[in-house]
Image (tube, rainbow, N blue to C red; front, side, top):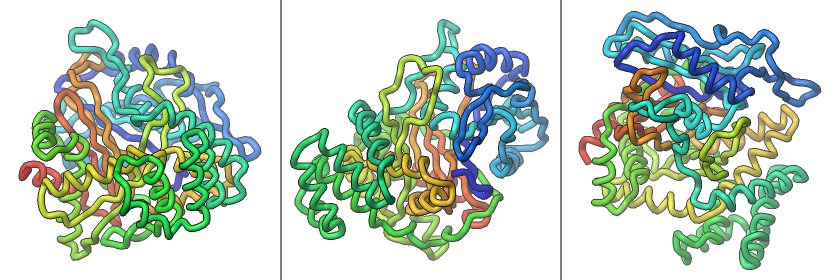
Length: 460
């Protein structure tokens, strides 16, 4: 899934109000990262078309951790980070780097991390980063149960195993994607099997009919509707950011969103924190596209969902245990209440379906396909969305890293295929941050998106 113009790197930023020493950072990484998780001292190698992890015989922490001296302000930091988005990780070494950046006005130290997605999924990597931290009082290692698993994570884990088997013997994408829901349905209810068989015969005919006569909580019907949309959805809606991405990327971010206030807005509008934050993004992107005379009724996002319950302790092998679901985000809504209600309805339909299992089956087929076919399948799947949108709740209390309090943190999701935009929502210590990354040619002004997000939040 790596492309020169869209690298599969999970990136994050952690900043501090006090200097962080490189020696202290190395000690933490040696004790809690390298010693506990062998993949971080291994490199990816290919033999006869198959990829394996093997120990790097010349592993040196100094090749992965460095101090970068910059002179400037936050705009200079954003420019530098955007440049790093285009830099490929050295394939001859383990696929990760950590940079300690100094010299930025208002920041004593900034830590910028890059981890290849092959090492672990984004949720695991967030857990990993906070497993390197301690509570402010120094009492113990921070619990790593950050983020949220899907409400049916246990069921989805079982379904994912079925998805692997279904995808493994699938002759093509359509057949495989249909086999997955039908086999998973067999573990749920006979009625779902009958409905799935009907879908296989008439997928397009089913979509609107089932949505019109059922509730958002009906798992069987919601699953069928979502599978139909996955199989029949056109590429992402053509608008201002449509086109082929280049190598150069640009980034921005939003800080200072009060999580307690977001909860209050959610209570007032009968929505969750996630519903409110997605509504803010919807309202901001409505204005952004409207300013470019390119407003559309709806855009589609890919949203990561964890397939396994969170462990109290991270396993030695982290792995990728996630799926992607499609989130149709309505635009052009007139008020906060309307936007929150619309996002709540969309998310409920996803939560009460097993769409994550179906999309996991598609992902598995891509992974098991020959390279040329995998590239085409990746494009087919990824290009149905404008990009990836994620919301990961982090620790509620402040923590320290290498003995220094963490002032704040945010992240950026990787983009795939021809995706031009990615948005990552993160909460830590009562504050919400939002990372925005865009293709420099297609979304040259992510700072404007960030500004509009701030304005829409302030207006709520």
